[in-house]
Length: 227
Figure 1 (cartoon, rainbow, N blue to C red):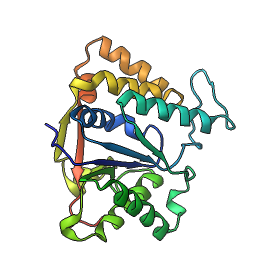
Figure 2: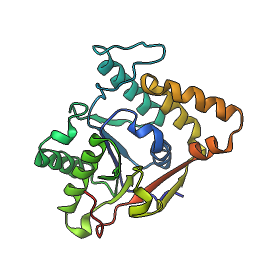
Figure 3: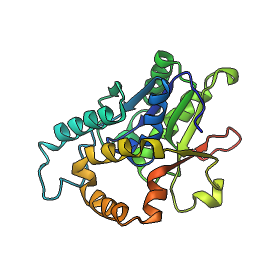
C-alpha cells in the first residue's frame, strides 16, 4: 500500500521513462490526492524508434515525443509536467553543478517528501545514471533531517549482486488501465512492445499481469555509494 506523501517529485531524462515502471505509482498517488510533479529533462529527440509503421522522422520526432509526453501525463491525471529543455543523450556531459542546481531548484519549489528517479550507476543508459547522480548529489547537500526519501529504479545486470532485491513494492492493479494508456501514449517508442503485451494480456498470461500490476523500487540508502 502506498504511503501518503506530502508531494512526489519524479525526475527522469526521457519521455516514456515514467511509463514502464512508475506510471501506476504516479497514477495511484494522484488518485490519493497527493500532488505529483514530473520533471522530464529532455524530449528524447535522439530516440531510435520512429513508430511502426514509421510516422516520425528526425525533424518531427522532438515535437511528436513532446505531444506523446503530454498525452501520457493526461493519461495518469498528472497536471504538473515540467519539460526542462536539455538535449537527449547529453545529460552525462552537462556540468555537474548545473545539474545539481537544476534538481535543487525543483526540490525548493515543490518541497517533496518523496523523489523518484534512477539509481546512479545501475540504470544502464548514461542519461539515466547522470540524472540519478544529480538527484543524489543535490539531496546529499541537504540537512539530513530535511532530506526527502528517494525511490530509485535499477535494472543493470549486477543490480541484485550489489544491492539485493527491491525493498518497495506497489500493487497498481487498480490503475492498470491508466498504466496501459500511458504506455500507449508513447506510441513512437512502445508500439512494438504494446502489441505483444496486449496479446499476452488477452491470453491471460500470468507473467504479463504480474508485470502490469507490480512496480518495485530501491530506497536509496546513504551508507551505499554507487555514483
